[in-house]
Every structure is written in structure tokens, then in C-alpha cells.
Image 1: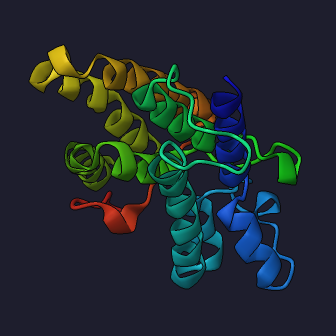
Image 2 (image 1 turned 135 degrees about the vertical axis):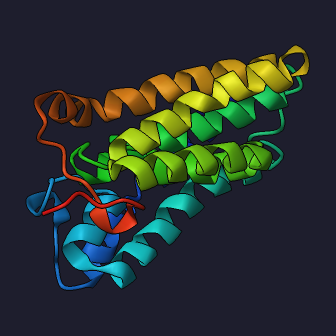
Length: 215
């Protein structure tokens, strides 16, 4: 259990290295939590600081979601041997989940982070890269028709357990339940978007829409 606890902790700490806040500090002390929507994520970075800033944020946030589940489960840490009683599958999923939680609630930045989408993408690339395709298709379809980034992200996350349930559930029970938990968590972190959608105040990314609203 020592291995499990330590690797989950390391995954959380890696996830807590928030890309938007790191790039902001390197760019002269910009804290995007005080700008735009106030969210320390890629969308707010793009809207308030531009494409190059947002690109660097995405590289960090995707990378920190990818590395823990890809590297840690098979890595023997100094003084902590691999525990034969720990399932490598569950350990991989736990590391992926911890990285996403770390992004949203980073200990390094007063537990005020992003909403987890980019880090979740990195985690998926490590644990089930084929799932990024249906998620991307849904995300692009919803964004291009509605312009709502948050809605696109929530629906892309929600389609993943459905996809696994329809295409490969008998052999992927652990992955299925991980994706259910991930979808619920992503929806929770986007609860502000849900509220604004209900009130008609949610901002659209109109440049991404195929059919733009008349002005």
C-alpha cells in the first residue's frame, strides 16, 4: 500500500503544477485567475493572453496528465519496491485521476486551478489513447455548432463511458468506472458553466462556430 499511496501522491503533486499559472509567472507575473472568467485553464488563457500563451499552457497541462499514469505504475522508486498485491491497472487509473484532481485543486496555488480537461486528455493518451478520437469528434461537433467550450468538454467526457460500454465493456470494467468518475468530476468542475448556460450568460467561442449568430 505504500507504493500505491506514494505514487498517487506524486501524481497529484505533478498535476498541481498548473500550466496557466506557471506560464503566467514566467511571462511577468500574470495571474489569469484575475482575468476573464477567472479560471486557470487553457480556454481562459487563450481568451485573455492569446494563442502562444495558451499553447504553452496546453503542453504543460496535457504533459502532466500523461506522465504519471505512463511512467509511475511500472517504476520502482528508491526504497519502495513494486507491490505484487497492487493491481497495475488500478494503480495506473489512480495516478491518472490524481493528476486531474491536482490540476483542479493545486496545492502549490492555493487549491485554485483549472477544470481538468487538458490534463484529462493527457491521462487518456496514456491509458487509452484510442478514446481520444470519439472524445475529439464529440467536442468538435458540439463546439462548432454551439460555440460553447464548456458544454463541448462536458459532453466529450460524458460520451467516453458510453463508448466503452457499447464497444468493449466485458474486458474493460476498471476503465469504464474510471471514465464514469472522470465524467462526473469534469461536469462538477464545469458547474459554473452549467449555471451560466441555464441563465443564458455563457460566452461563445464564435470563431469556432460553423454558423455564426447574426449580429
